[in-house]
Image 1 (cartoon, rainbow, N blue to C red):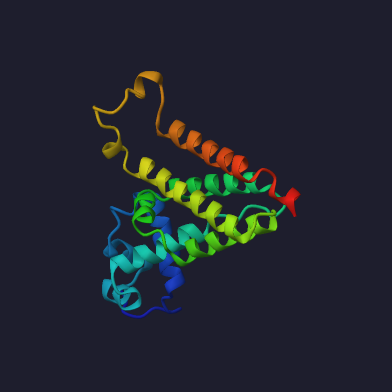
Image 2 (cartoon, rainbow, N blue to C red):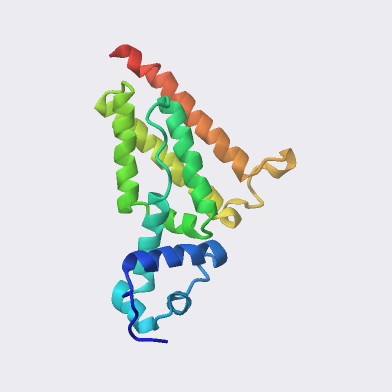
Length: 197
């Protein structure tokens, strides 16, 4: 493999290549050598640009979150939350193993940005800033709970737990129900915030 390339290797190229590989093999099976091979560079060159596999995973995780489309501004606040919830989960499904890493490292720059956007959207919808902060925190905490259910199914499905399988229930049923409860709870607490302004 060449030690130098033309054009030179960039961090953005490393991230996009790694995203493509995680969609194929998953983040757990990914190696720095595989990324270097896909980029046609030496592993040393890759480490020089990134530092470590943990650093690479952090960059890729942030790119996954950043790649979730922000819902349209014209949506009602509850539909906005549902759209973001579904967009994040669909994005994570395309990159196997990333949900587990997001659960363990939720504070990526893109994650902080979307939490701020959520608060701004709620304020624009008529929530007070205090209520928006509380509502956004509740919603994003629920998202982490969903990640726990879907990223760690073996740890959650224990034999001494209630027999949800006998009723045909799966993790998707629990998480969809949980989102409905969060939305209904916010409606019960705040009604139609825009009408209060």
